[in-house]
Length: 414
Ligand SMILES: Cc1cc2nc3c(=O)[nH]c(=O)nc-3n(C[C@H](O)[C@H](O)[C@H](O)COP(=O)(O)OP(=O)(O)OC[C@H]3O[C@@H](n4cnc5c(N)ncnc54)[C@H](O)[C@@H]3O)c2cc1C
Image (cartoon, rainbow, N blue to C red):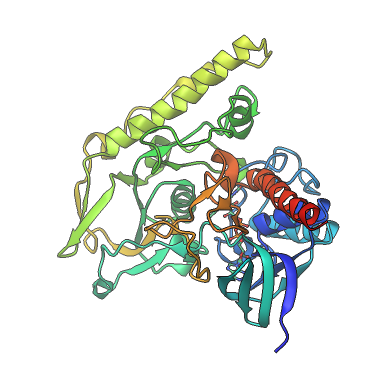
């Protein structure tokens, strides 16, 4: 059987694959992008219906194209984000082949042998752009026999999908918080289990928090601050974009709970850490205001003062007198949504490129297997790496690295 030969094979045509194609193309590196579904598929079918981007359109985009039809401070709905990447791929004439799944990649001498759903490919370089949020994690806490519907946030679409009754959302990062808010607005009785989190102000002194993260150099942090590796970020662009404030959600009728721990005899136990988690979230919020004020002062920025941003509502009863055990049926809970994050999955890569936990070993995306690269992973080079504009910059670096290898090979053979 004939084997197709390519210089650089990019696997996945989400934003990371499209960015990679743009930068490889600019450097004249011949390449092919394989996508098992459609361009930016995750934005279409792996997110709930009402999701909008977490950052405003001036920020959550690539430098080479604006979002049409949106004011800079608006938040694009997920379908528009997907359309944007399709249009972007057309604009840069990205050589993307959709509907082709990479089944396995092995190294053979100095080339990679790639088995796909449509035949074999030989590539000198392989770039994994298959996404960081691939395998939903559902802790096996509540047995299926309880009869309570259990889904991951990945499978949540809209309130109509859930049975009558109350709902428990576990996890209060951006997904869990936004889904819990939507369910509350739909008239459901909602319980939200909250772990450690950051909750930046949506806007402060007239600037969106993504602007402040840029000004303060926080997007460029190389590693997470100590002890914050597992701290999730609760932020939302929904309903025009509001600061996530758990006290306000409680005031609207949501019951807040600490971290979900165990389940036995129909009863779920929660850690006595709710007040602490809320207090640490407040501290994170206030520290961003402090840093922003100091930055504005140092740089002589004429931004409106916003003293009200520091006012906190009193703690609601569910925080001062927390529920530590909850009989789910007695509370009327008929559904649990696990907004508990994702694992990475590189099952197709039959390569010695991973640590004992299956995580890629790399330096800024350059793996320990010569010719193998990763893009789009959290903290690949810095905090921004898994976000739309951050992955574009990482792709730029990796394409430069690949092009350099190519030119040193051709100068050696000259
Ligand atoms: C709920 C949610 C909301 C988010 N919101 C934002 C936001 O508002 N702003 C922001 O900047 N970031 C956001 N992110 C983070 C990040 O931007 C997205 O997850 C984004 O989809 C990541 O892009 P990617 O290209 O790395 O991965 P993906 O978009 O997942 O793309 C990977 C592609 O690879 C394909 N693929 C996988 N395996 C194979 C294979 N073996 N062969 C061929 N193709 C394959 C998949 O079909 C997919 O299309 C969000 C993440 C989540 C989970």
